Length: 324
Image (cartoon, rainbow, N blue to C red; front, side):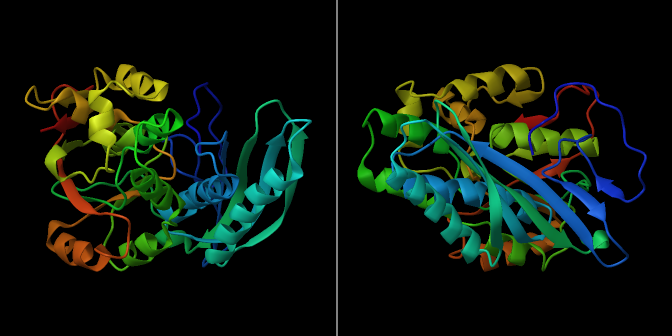
Protein backbone atom coordinates (compact mmCIF):
# COMPACT_ATOMS: atom_id res chain seq x y z
CA UNK A 1 0.00 0.00 0.00
CA UNK A 2 1.49 3.32 -1.07
CA UNK A 3 2.56 5.74 1.61
CA UNK A 4 0.05 8.57 2.04
CA UNK A 5 1.82 11.89 1.60
CA UNK A 6 -1.04 14.28 2.34
CA UNK A 7 -2.86 14.94 5.62
CA UNK A 8 -6.12 13.05 5.83
CA UNK A 9 -8.54 12.71 8.74
CA UNK A 10 -8.24 9.84 11.21
CA UNK A 11 -11.05 7.31 11.06
CA UNK A 12 -12.99 6.57 14.26
CA UNK A 13 -14.36 3.12 13.38
CA UNK A 14 -13.25 0.65 16.11
CA UNK A 15 -13.33 -2.21 13.61
CA UNK A 16 -10.68 -0.56 11.42
CA UNK A 17 -7.64 -2.32 12.86
CA UNK A 18 -5.00 -0.96 10.47
CA UNK A 19 -5.11 2.16 8.28
CA UNK A 20 -2.54 4.36 6.56
CA UNK A 21 -1.30 6.17 9.68
CA UNK A 22 1.92 4.13 10.01
CA UNK A 23 2.47 3.33 6.30
CA UNK A 24 1.44 -0.28 6.85
CA UNK A 25 1.23 -2.73 3.97
CA UNK A 26 -2.56 -3.01 3.80
CA UNK A 27 -5.79 -1.93 5.47
CA UNK A 28 -7.41 -4.34 7.92
CA UNK A 29 -11.05 -4.35 8.99
CA UNK A 30 -12.57 -6.68 11.61
CA UNK A 31 -15.64 -8.54 10.35
CA UNK A 32 -16.28 -10.43 13.58
CA UNK A 33 -14.33 -11.95 16.49
CA UNK A 34 -12.59 -14.52 14.29
CA UNK A 35 -12.28 -12.87 10.89
CA UNK A 36 -10.62 -9.73 9.60
CA UNK A 37 -10.45 -8.63 5.97
CA UNK A 38 -7.13 -7.38 4.57
CA UNK A 39 -7.26 -5.10 1.55
CA UNK A 40 -4.43 -3.83 -0.64
CA UNK A 41 -3.69 -2.67 -4.19
CA UNK A 42 -0.54 -2.22 -6.25
CA UNK A 43 0.35 -1.75 -9.92
CA UNK A 44 3.28 -0.40 -11.95
CA UNK A 45 4.79 -0.16 -15.47
CA UNK A 46 6.82 -3.09 -16.87
CA UNK A 47 10.02 -3.89 -14.99
CA UNK A 48 11.11 -6.68 -17.38
CA UNK A 49 10.77 -7.24 -21.12
CA UNK A 50 8.84 -10.52 -21.14
CA UNK A 51 5.10 -9.82 -20.70
CA UNK A 52 4.37 -13.10 -18.92
CA UNK A 53 7.16 -12.49 -16.41
CA UNK A 54 5.89 -8.94 -15.93
CA UNK A 55 2.39 -10.18 -15.13
CA UNK A 56 3.69 -12.79 -12.70
CA UNK A 57 5.94 -10.28 -10.92
CA UNK A 58 3.15 -7.71 -10.62
CA UNK A 59 0.81 -10.32 -9.14
CA UNK A 60 3.43 -11.61 -6.69
CA UNK A 61 4.08 -8.02 -5.64
CA UNK A 62 0.39 -7.31 -5.03
CA UNK A 63 -0.06 -10.52 -3.03
CA UNK A 64 2.96 -9.67 -0.90
CA UNK A 65 1.09 -7.01 1.09
CA UNK A 66 -1.35 -9.65 2.32
CA UNK A 67 1.44 -12.03 3.33
CA UNK A 68 3.28 -9.22 5.13
CA UNK A 69 0.22 -8.78 7.37
CA UNK A 70 0.18 -12.52 8.13
CA UNK A 71 -2.92 -13.07 6.00
CA UNK A 72 -4.17 -15.49 3.37
CA UNK A 73 -5.12 -13.96 -0.03
CA UNK A 74 -8.48 -15.05 -1.44
CA UNK A 75 -9.76 -12.62 -4.09
CA UNK A 76 -7.99 -10.45 -6.65
CA UNK A 77 -9.09 -8.01 -9.35
CA UNK A 78 -6.92 -6.95 -12.29
CA UNK A 79 -5.91 -3.33 -12.90
CA UNK A 80 -4.68 -2.91 -16.47
CA UNK A 81 -3.64 0.11 -18.50
CA UNK A 82 -2.83 -0.51 -22.17
CA UNK A 83 -2.02 1.68 -25.19
CA UNK A 84 -4.53 1.97 -28.04
CA UNK A 85 -2.34 -0.07 -30.41
CA UNK A 86 -1.19 -2.72 -27.90
CA UNK A 87 -0.74 -6.19 -29.39
CA UNK A 88 -3.51 -8.43 -27.95
CA UNK A 89 -1.01 -11.27 -27.55
CA UNK A 90 1.05 -9.11 -25.17
CA UNK A 91 -2.04 -8.24 -23.14
CA UNK A 92 -2.94 -11.92 -22.97
CA UNK A 93 0.54 -12.86 -21.78
CA UNK A 94 0.52 -10.23 -19.01
CA UNK A 95 -2.86 -11.38 -17.75
CA UNK A 96 -1.87 -15.04 -17.97
CA UNK A 97 1.24 -14.37 -15.90
CA UNK A 98 -0.91 -12.69 -13.26
CA UNK A 99 -3.53 -15.44 -13.39
CA UNK A 100 -0.98 -18.22 -12.93
CA UNK A 101 0.58 -16.49 -9.93
CA UNK A 102 -2.80 -15.84 -8.29
CA UNK A 103 -3.70 -19.49 -8.89
CA UNK A 104 -0.41 -20.53 -7.26
CA UNK A 105 -1.53 -18.56 -4.20
CA UNK A 106 -4.83 -20.52 -4.14
CA UNK A 107 -6.68 -17.26 -4.68
CA UNK A 108 -9.18 -16.23 -7.37
CA UNK A 109 -9.19 -13.48 -9.98
CA UNK A 110 -12.77 -12.25 -10.12
CA UNK A 111 -12.54 -9.55 -12.78
CA UNK A 112 -10.98 -6.13 -12.90
CA UNK A 113 -10.82 -2.90 -14.87
CA UNK A 114 -8.97 -1.82 -18.01
CA UNK A 115 -8.31 1.68 -19.36
CA UNK A 116 -6.39 3.09 -22.31
CA UNK A 117 -3.04 4.61 -21.38
CA UNK A 118 0.05 5.44 -23.47
CA UNK A 119 2.21 3.50 -20.99
CA UNK A 120 1.21 -0.06 -20.02
CA UNK A 121 0.66 -0.71 -16.33
CA UNK A 122 -0.56 -3.80 -14.52
CA UNK A 123 -1.31 -4.88 -10.98
CA UNK A 124 -4.10 -6.10 -8.77
CA UNK A 125 -6.34 -5.23 -5.88
CA UNK A 126 -6.12 -8.14 -3.45
CA UNK A 127 -8.37 -9.18 -0.58
CA UNK A 128 -7.19 -11.54 2.13
CA UNK A 129 -8.28 -12.79 5.52
CA UNK A 130 -6.74 -13.39 8.94
CA UNK A 131 -7.75 -13.69 12.56
CA UNK A 132 -8.07 -10.14 13.96
CA UNK A 133 -5.82 -11.03 16.91
CA UNK A 134 -3.05 -12.34 14.63
CA UNK A 135 -2.57 -9.41 12.28
CA UNK A 136 1.07 -8.44 11.82
CA UNK A 137 1.88 -4.73 11.56
CA UNK A 138 5.09 -2.95 10.71
CA UNK A 139 5.29 -1.70 14.30
CA UNK A 140 5.53 -3.66 17.55
CA UNK A 141 9.27 -4.32 17.60
CA UNK A 142 10.81 -5.44 20.89
CA UNK A 143 14.29 -4.35 21.90
CA UNK A 144 16.69 -7.21 21.21
CA UNK A 145 14.60 -8.77 18.43
CA UNK A 146 16.44 -10.34 15.51
CA UNK A 147 15.62 -9.19 11.97
CA UNK A 148 15.17 -11.71 9.17
CA UNK A 149 14.97 -10.90 5.43
CA UNK A 150 13.61 -13.51 2.99
CA UNK A 151 14.71 -12.32 -0.48
CA UNK A 152 17.89 -10.77 -1.86
CA UNK A 153 17.86 -7.04 -2.61
CA UNK A 154 19.11 -5.22 -5.70
CA UNK A 155 16.21 -5.70 -8.13
CA UNK A 156 16.06 -2.02 -9.06
CA UNK A 157 19.74 -1.95 -9.99
CA UNK A 158 19.64 -5.29 -11.82
CA UNK A 159 16.51 -4.34 -13.78
CA UNK A 160 18.13 -1.04 -14.76
CA UNK A 161 21.26 -2.85 -15.92
CA UNK A 162 19.23 -5.41 -17.87
CA UNK A 163 17.57 -2.65 -19.91
CA UNK A 164 20.96 -1.72 -21.35
CA UNK A 165 22.28 -5.31 -21.62
CA UNK A 166 24.97 -4.96 -18.97
CA UNK A 167 24.30 -8.20 -17.10
CA UNK A 168 24.17 -11.84 -18.09
CA UNK A 169 20.93 -13.63 -18.87
CA UNK A 170 21.63 -15.88 -15.88
CA UNK A 171 21.84 -12.96 -13.44
CA UNK A 172 18.77 -11.32 -14.98
CA UNK A 173 16.83 -14.58 -14.64
CA UNK A 174 17.90 -14.86 -10.99
CA UNK A 175 16.33 -11.46 -10.32
CA UNK A 176 13.17 -12.32 -12.26
CA UNK A 177 12.75 -15.60 -10.39
CA UNK A 178 13.17 -13.83 -7.06
CA UNK A 179 10.62 -11.14 -7.93
CA UNK A 180 8.12 -13.72 -9.20
CA UNK A 181 8.42 -15.90 -6.09
CA UNK A 182 5.44 -15.60 -3.78
CA UNK A 183 6.08 -14.67 -0.16
CA UNK A 184 3.59 -17.40 0.72
CA UNK A 185 6.12 -19.93 2.06
CA UNK A 186 8.00 -17.21 3.92
CA UNK A 187 4.72 -16.12 5.53
CA UNK A 188 3.71 -19.67 6.48
CA UNK A 189 7.06 -20.27 8.17
CA UNK A 190 7.11 -16.83 9.79
CA UNK A 191 3.71 -17.47 11.40
CA UNK A 192 5.08 -20.49 13.27
CA UNK A 193 7.15 -18.12 15.42
CA UNK A 194 6.50 -15.28 17.84
CA UNK A 195 6.87 -12.53 15.25
CA UNK A 196 6.44 -9.03 16.67
CA UNK A 197 6.39 -6.97 13.46
CA UNK A 198 6.67 -7.53 9.71
CA UNK A 199 6.66 -5.73 6.38
CA UNK A 200 7.63 -6.42 2.78
CA UNK A 201 10.46 -4.66 0.99
CA UNK A 202 9.33 -2.68 -2.05
CA UNK A 203 9.77 0.84 -3.42
CA UNK A 204 11.32 2.49 -0.36
CA UNK A 205 14.14 -0.07 -0.35
CA UNK A 206 15.44 -2.09 2.57
CA UNK A 207 16.43 0.95 4.61
CA UNK A 208 13.21 2.84 3.92
CA UNK A 209 10.92 0.04 5.04
CA UNK A 210 13.21 -0.72 7.99
CA UNK A 211 12.95 2.94 9.00
CA UNK A 212 9.14 2.77 8.98
CA UNK A 213 9.30 -0.23 11.33
CA UNK A 214 11.71 1.51 13.68
CA UNK A 215 9.85 4.82 13.70
CA UNK A 216 6.47 3.22 14.36
CA UNK A 217 7.94 1.22 17.24
CA UNK A 218 9.98 4.18 18.60
CA UNK A 219 13.13 2.04 18.60
CA UNK A 220 16.23 1.72 16.44
CA UNK A 221 17.51 -0.95 14.07
CA UNK A 222 21.11 -2.11 13.81
CA UNK A 223 21.70 -3.49 10.29
CA UNK A 224 24.71 -5.73 9.56
CA UNK A 225 25.39 -4.94 5.90
CA UNK A 226 27.62 -8.03 5.50
CA UNK A 227 24.66 -10.33 6.20
CA UNK A 228 22.14 -8.77 3.82
CA UNK A 229 21.45 -11.12 0.85
CA UNK A 230 22.15 -9.35 -2.46
CA UNK A 231 21.41 -10.37 -6.05
CA UNK A 232 24.30 -11.34 -8.33
CA UNK A 233 25.69 -8.36 -10.31
CA UNK A 234 23.93 -5.76 -8.13
CA UNK A 235 27.12 -4.63 -6.39
CA UNK A 236 29.11 -4.61 -9.64
CA UNK A 237 26.43 -2.57 -11.41
CA UNK A 238 26.21 -0.14 -8.50
CA UNK A 239 30.00 0.33 -8.73
CA UNK A 240 29.47 1.37 -12.36
CA UNK A 241 26.86 3.92 -11.37
CA UNK A 242 23.90 1.91 -12.70
CA UNK A 243 21.47 3.22 -10.11
CA UNK A 244 17.72 3.75 -10.63
CA UNK A 245 16.29 7.20 -9.97
CA UNK A 246 14.25 5.89 -7.04
CA UNK A 247 17.41 4.99 -5.12
CA UNK A 248 18.51 8.62 -5.10
CA UNK A 249 15.06 9.64 -3.87
CA UNK A 250 15.23 7.07 -1.08
CA UNK A 251 18.70 8.31 -0.08
CA UNK A 252 17.53 11.94 0.07
CA UNK A 253 14.50 10.99 2.17
CA UNK A 254 16.57 8.93 4.59
CA UNK A 255 19.64 11.16 4.71
CA UNK A 256 19.00 12.44 8.25
CA UNK A 257 17.28 9.24 9.41
CA UNK A 258 19.96 6.65 8.71
CA UNK A 259 23.58 6.51 9.89
CA UNK A 260 25.89 4.46 7.69
CA UNK A 261 29.35 3.54 8.97
CA UNK A 262 32.09 5.25 6.97
CA UNK A 263 33.77 1.90 6.27
CA UNK A 264 30.85 0.70 4.14
CA UNK A 265 31.59 0.99 0.38
CA UNK A 266 29.41 3.34 -1.65
CA UNK A 267 28.16 0.57 -3.94
CA UNK A 268 26.92 -1.45 -0.95
CA UNK A 269 25.19 1.60 0.50
CA UNK A 270 23.54 2.21 -2.90
CA UNK A 271 22.11 -1.32 -2.88
CA UNK A 272 20.66 -0.77 0.60
CA UNK A 273 18.77 2.28 -0.74
CA UNK A 274 17.73 0.51 -3.97
CA UNK A 275 13.94 0.46 -4.58
CA UNK A 276 12.70 -3.12 -4.79
CA UNK A 277 9.99 -4.76 -6.84
CA UNK A 278 8.28 -7.72 -5.16
CA UNK A 279 10.91 -7.97 -2.46
CA UNK A 280 10.99 -10.30 0.51
CA UNK A 281 9.51 -10.11 3.97
CA UNK A 282 11.39 -8.35 6.75
CA UNK A 283 10.27 -9.43 10.20
CA UNK A 284 11.35 -9.26 13.82
CA UNK A 285 11.24 -12.09 16.34
CA UNK A 286 12.92 -13.06 19.61
CA UNK A 287 16.63 -13.86 19.13
CA UNK A 288 16.26 -17.32 20.69
CA UNK A 289 13.84 -18.25 17.86
CA UNK A 290 15.75 -16.65 15.00
CA UNK A 291 18.19 -19.46 14.16
CA UNK A 292 15.43 -22.10 14.06
CA UNK A 293 13.33 -19.85 11.84
CA UNK A 294 16.28 -19.15 9.55
CA UNK A 295 17.03 -22.87 9.27
CA UNK A 296 13.44 -23.56 8.27
CA UNK A 297 13.49 -20.78 5.67
CA UNK A 298 16.82 -21.78 4.12
CA UNK A 299 16.33 -23.47 0.77
CA UNK A 300 12.62 -22.61 0.66
CA UNK A 301 12.88 -18.90 -0.16
CA UNK A 302 15.09 -17.14 -2.74
CA UNK A 303 17.58 -16.10 -0.04
CA UNK A 304 17.44 -15.33 3.66
CA UNK A 305 19.52 -14.01 6.47
CA UNK A 306 19.48 -12.59 9.98
CA UNK A 307 20.48 -9.07 8.96
CA UNK A 308 20.46 -7.23 12.27
CA UNK A 309 18.69 -6.57 15.51
CA UNK A 310 16.40 -4.10 17.24
CA UNK A 311 18.17 -1.59 19.45
CA UNK A 312 17.05 0.90 22.08
CA UNK A 313 15.71 4.41 21.45
CA UNK A 314 18.38 7.04 20.83
CA UNK A 315 18.65 10.63 21.98
CA UNK A 316 18.68 11.70 18.33
CA UNK A 317 15.06 10.88 17.54
CA UNK A 318 15.56 11.45 13.79
CA UNK A 319 18.14 8.70 13.44
CA UNK A 320 16.48 5.27 13.57
CA UNK A 321 18.71 3.05 11.43
CA UNK A 322 22.39 2.33 12.09
CA UNK A 323 24.22 0.39 9.37
CA UNK A 324 27.55 -1.20 10.09
